[in-house]
Length: 138
Image 1 (cartoon, helix red, strand yellow):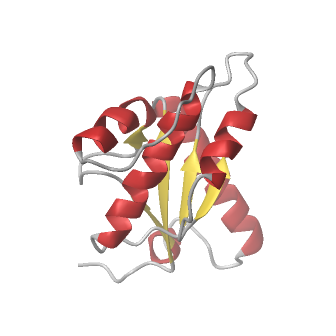
Image 2: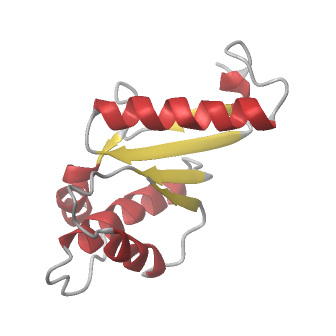
Image 3: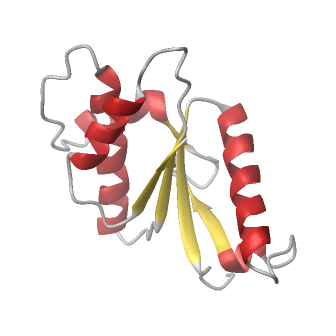
């Protein structure tokens, strides 16, 4: 079993394109900041947490259903900003994973805006709780 990495990342995304973009950009940032971050050492520095071993990321569109099934406290009337509930649900899923021993240091949420102003709703979801991990909206 490989040793624990320095940081555990999690990604909630809409599709594999988001997965590819976020992992590539994250690795570029780490390469620029950490001199010894290379393809050979990256798993010692960072690894990605997913809901199951065969998954590469958390499917954002399933977050609300999964959180409800687990009885997580998704509260609120989200009105015209349904992404607030979806993103809050994902954050609650990550919080639950942490409570079950799966460390997450940084959670990335990648979502298409489709030309809609969704950033305010995403920020509202982030402010809706106390999270023990950093959150990056992408």
